[in-house]
Image 1: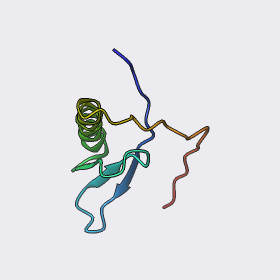
Image 2 (image 1 turned 30 degrees about the vertical axis):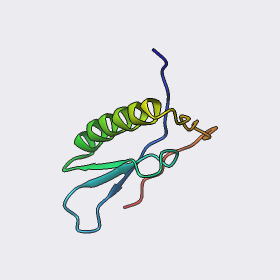
Image 3 (image 1 turned 120 degrees about the vertical axis):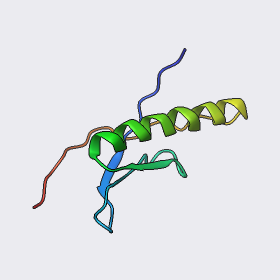
Image 4 (image 1 turned 60 degrees about the vertical axis):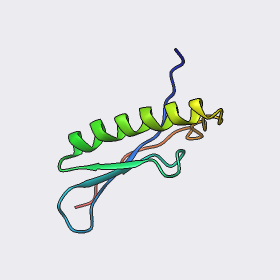
Length: 75
């Protein structure tokens, strides 16, 4: 089994009722959750399903092009 690493982004939803999660390297692959931890779990599952679908259809798996990144917090 091959393992892949994908950058994920989690953002507060505009309605303020949860968090949206997505991977910039996997267009169309996104999820959400009521908490950050739930959003992380949900996007992991969405990525697994997305990669399985790409593999089943003979499509290439996009590679993570992020070389480095950092985090910042804004009030």
